[in-house]
Image 1: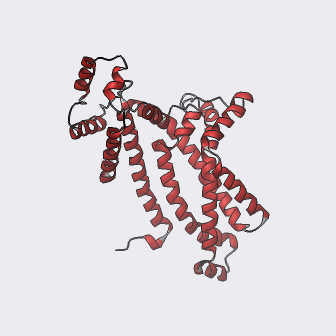
Image 2: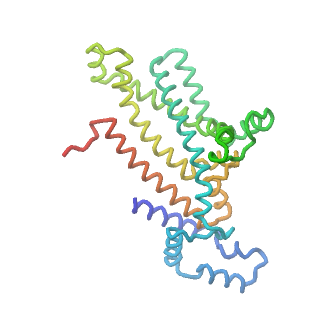
Image 3: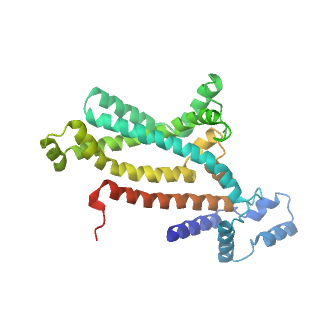
Length: 305
């Protein structure tokens, strides 16, 4: 984890150092700034120090909770913690939807493989995968939120402030974000289930007299879910770490992803580094949890003393 976070931090810092017109002092001072003002800003923020000193200073501020945005001069950690409940609300709700419907539709497609219902599910899955999130979100927000008034036209209400209003505000973003994953996961579950159904141990289970439902639940589904668990853990971590930028922006949720997008637009290094490290941490942790779940689902991958 430490090596991954170190590599991510170095690459992020280096990219911003190489960006043309990336001088933060010039952006902070404005277009009419004098050389004296630029020099004062560089001295105050340490922009004249060697690159490695700037990197160490940035990391010290980042992990010490003292990182300050160049553009807004606000504490970066405070802004991330403010947006985290919004991002978690979006990510958890959407993740539950896409795993439940993705697995359910994938199993249905595998059970009815080759039939009309399976072909219809395939078409719907491809449509869901093909629709851009920003386009689908804009349409849903315009027609269901603005014109029909069934859902709020963007914004966020805290869960502790009003649970019903929180749910009312989050339903549409959950559906929009999860549709892409539902189509993708259903195809993976279908393919994995069909492949597992032809394994020797499944045929042995049938020969022992187990019902198709028992074979499907106890033997087929348990193994077929292994690749799905891997994808779900990583996708969930990516969404929390800023992967839902477009969804948050369309629905104006003001979460971590939207904060990162606005900071990138301003070439504001401290917030971008903080969100990047935040996302990398979630990816590494979720990857470790996925490995543990693999061992629980599949005895073949367990370590034996």
